[in-house]
Amino acid sequence: MEAQAVRTSEGMHPEAQIAFVKKQLKQKEVRITAAYQQLLQHADSALAHSSHALADFNVPGYYQDAQGHRTSSRSLQSDAFDAYACALAYRLSNNTRYLDKARYFLNGWAQTNTGYSNADGPLVMAYSGTALVIAASLLQDSWPEQDKFRTWVTQVYKKACDEIRHRKNNWADWGRFGSVLSAQYLGDDAEIRVNIDLIRRDLFDKITEDGHMPHETRRGNNGIWYTYFSLAPITAACWVAYNATGENLFTMSQGAASLKFALDYLFHYNLHADSWPWFDNPRPGTVANWPGNLFEALALIYDDPKYSSYTKAEPAICISSHHFAWSFPTLMPARFTY
Image 1 (tube, helix red, strand yellow):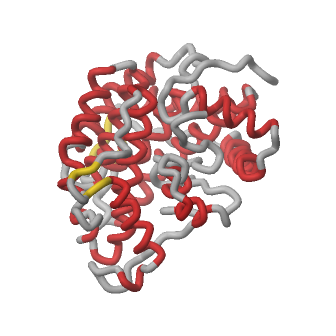
Image 2: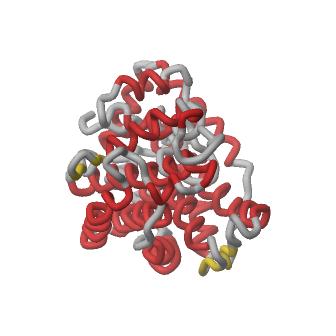
């Protein structure tokens, strides 16, 4: 069954982007078509899933209880991605099966969850809950019962994000991304500005003139991962801010330091992990997962052929678990003009 297309908010997926992708699908553009089929597989799987919403999202610290952390996190991560996949599938296909299922997951968390707790509760709420807010933004005009979800965003999700957005490391970056997403969804222009100012204020405490991020490179053999895990929400927040205000934060620089320089630093050492200067035997990522999603997303933003050359061998890149910043970069290209 099909419904009439609706307007979306100018958040992670502005209306111009959705219209562009629909046009590319009609023209059977190869990579976008492959990514769309990938999306539909995820959305179709989600149709059979049940909600895992919890009243108390209790997540122990990863380095104190890794298994407990993973188990507790999975409830939100699974439902959030399913909601996001279904919401996006609905916007691109107009199939109301996906609309109904996305609302099911969103309503589940809005009606059940009243808070978060334990050492990593606010962090995981921030970086996994992004997908719920993006899904809600996609469905903003086709979801009559969203008042409860708006209340949940205000009283639980954004509260968690705001609680951590003044930290020094990637916790702050996820807090700001979640907070600016929430502000955009709630129509709070003043809060959008607060998050833009926070990003501007300390970006070059995070990024040095040689491009490394000292709060992240110090994390042992996970320094490459944590550098990615900081840059992904920073750049995604810049994208939401651009869509909301037209302000371009991607060009931020101070002296020799710049956001682009930090990305190039990550790009180089992910390919040459054996020369990583901060720790022996670091763990690099892959094209199909992280940081492939980040460089796929930013290839057009920065018009950088080395990024697109790196990612083009992968038919379609998707991040379907754990954190949700650039989750569908092949399907939903980020660019300043469509």
